[in-house]
Figure 1 (cartoon, helix red, strand yellow):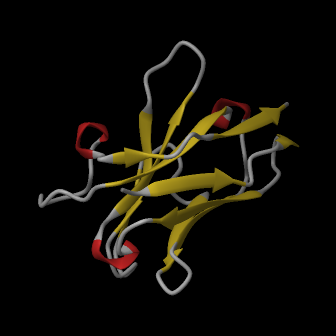
Figure 2 (cartoon, rainbow, N blue to C red):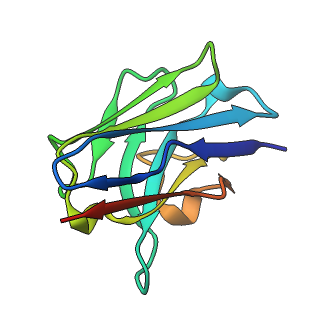
Length: 125
């Protein structure tokens, strides 16, 4: 079993910054690609960013490219999402996920095997 626990969500003003954390436990963390997704009220859960097993490769949604940075510390079994220049449209519950199954490419929402419970980010104008 895998447990993922997100933290760091807050209410901030537009232009501000936040760093989200995702602490993993239960299985070898460093063997799996991971990702951040987000879900705003009334919308489907959408992709934000993904990171390879080693952390050497990353991939971002166009809407966050240049503003968000995903990283991971395998020694601490923790993944991060640094969010800068936040906008009201970034308001959502942010979820971390891990893909354990063998697959190629970046993990899609359907391929995520375990999810955290999410952390709320609210950006006011």
